[in-house]
Image 1 (cartoon, rainbow, N blue to C red):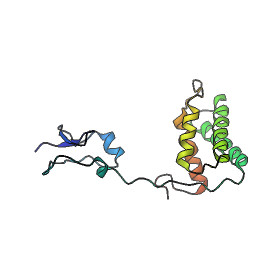
Image 2 (image 1 turned 90 degrees about the vertical axis):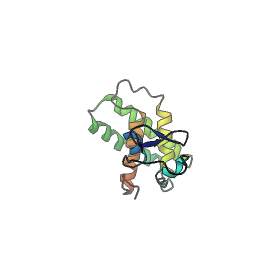
Image 3 (image 1 turned 45 degrees about the horizontal axis):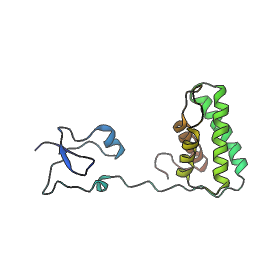
Length: 156
C-alpha cells in the first residue's frame, strides 16, 4: 500500500511521502509510513502533541524595576547576538515599555506577554537592525525563563 499523509480536511491521502519534514517537526514526530485502516477519516487533533502548560510569572512587585532589568538584559543579549547597534537601545527600551505596561495591567502569563510584545513591536521600525519582533519577543521569553530558573526546552 502507498504511504499516506493526513490532509487539512482530516483524510489520509496517498502522496508517496508520509509528511513534509517541517510538519513532522511541528508535531514533534519523526516522519513515518502510515497505511489506511478500515476508515480513512481521522481526527487531526489525535495526532497533535500534548500542549505545553502555560508559564505564569509571579505577580509583579515592582514593574518598573522589572522593566529596567529587562531593558538592560535584552540590550546585552541584542549586542552579543550580532553587533552592537544604535537601534538595539531603542528596541530594548520599547520591549521593556510594553512589558512594564502589560505587567502593570496584571498580565502574568508568559505566552500572553510574548504575544503582546510581538503585536506591539510590529509597528517598530526594524530597518536599521538585524532583528525583528519575533526575535525580540523570543529573547524576552528566554531571558525571563532563565531568570526564573526554568528550562527553556521543556518548561520545567
